[in-house]
Length: 232
Ligand code: MN
Image (cartoon, rainbow, N blue to C red; front, top):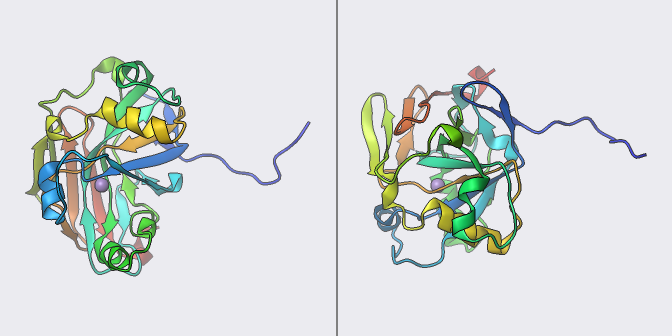
C-alpha cells in the first residue's frame, strides 16, 4: 500500500446551500463574445474557440484580492463559470447538461500589459492569467436548482459604475458546444471548471476598487482590490 509523501488537499469552492466543490482544473476560453473579440483587435468570426488554463489554486472567495506583482494594467473580465460533476472524452454537446454540477459568477483577472508584451513577442501568455487569486468567484448554484437562460444578464460594476453588460446568449460558442470542443482535446473530469468567456467592456482595476459581478440569479460576486501587504 502506497502513501502520499507530502500533505496536500485540493482548493475548494463553497456551494450555495452548503457543501464544497473540490477544484481539479480551471479551464478558460478566450474571445467568446464578438464585441470583446473586436475590442481586443481580433476577428470575431466563428473560428474554433481558444482554450487556456489557470492553476487550480487561482480560485478565490475571500472577498479581498491582492493587486498582483509586475503589472500596471490589471483588467477585469466577468464570466459565467461552469462546474463539472462528471467529465469524459469526446462528449457531444447534447450529453453535457447531465454532467454539469452547477454555475457561478467569476472574474478572469488578467495582467493585460504582461499579456500584450508576451503576445507581441510570440511567447506563451499563461502567466498573465494564472497568478494567485486570479479567479475570484461567487458561490456555486447547483444546476438542479436551475441554470442561467440565454437571456441571463451578465454584468460587472466597479464602484457602482457598470463596465460590462451583455446577455449570456451572446456567446459565440454556447456552454455545451465549448465543452464538446474542449473534450475533443483533453479528458474533462469531475472537479473541473470552465470560464466561458467575457463580453465587451474589459478595463483596468486599481487598489481600493470595489467590484460587483452578477449573472442573472446566480449568487453575486463582490470583492475589493487591496495592496499585496494588506491581503492577509
Ligand atoms: Mn477571459
